[in-house]
Image (cartoon, rainbow, N blue to C red; front, side):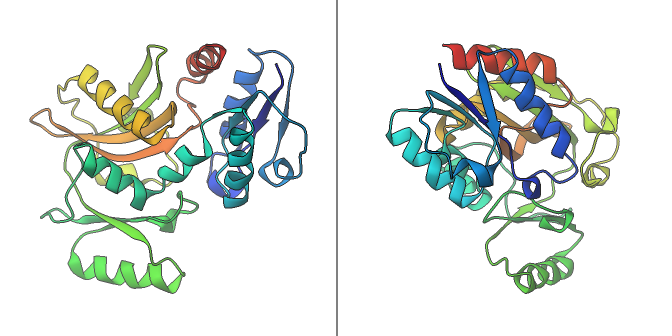
Length: 259
């Protein structure tokens, strides 16, 4: 089997470049002979592959991958799936599937997030304590050339990171407020976790429902658990670094692509 692994362009790996490379390398080490490439180099390749493991997000990469899929290659995660993970598009899909997400209105502040692409820098996700700050943040986004953004009301509760791989039994949750692992420090807004009781299996089912709708079997995300035990998905990502559980995740991804 001819296998290609595409590393994510560094602009899409803020503070996580090596972590993203490590999960790809760990998965490929569990498979047969393969090669790796950058997003920029991938689009110049004329060789055909049976399996492409993709962490890429550039539009040019997506276009090239669609051609590979049309020619019979299996791509994980697919180009169309990665495109569906753009926040504004994903918000529509989540609403259509009745996935529990925060509303745009609330009394505890707001989050504004870049909607046209994945987060590339700290300014792409911002907490606003009130509507005045929110309106200023909107203007700041537009000034940076970003007219597509998503607004969510802040939900008080425990922030949870989850990671999964469809159809493998792999699903893990972690509290960044406990382990201190962070990209931009936004976890401080929710404070130290209280470890509210919630239905982990229900969260898994919900996350996998979304991953299937998005066509991203290798996924991760964020959720807020309220004191009442309800949860709301606040973010969802195609192929995260799995840095908290990389060995287990690599085994699961290798298992998935061997089916």
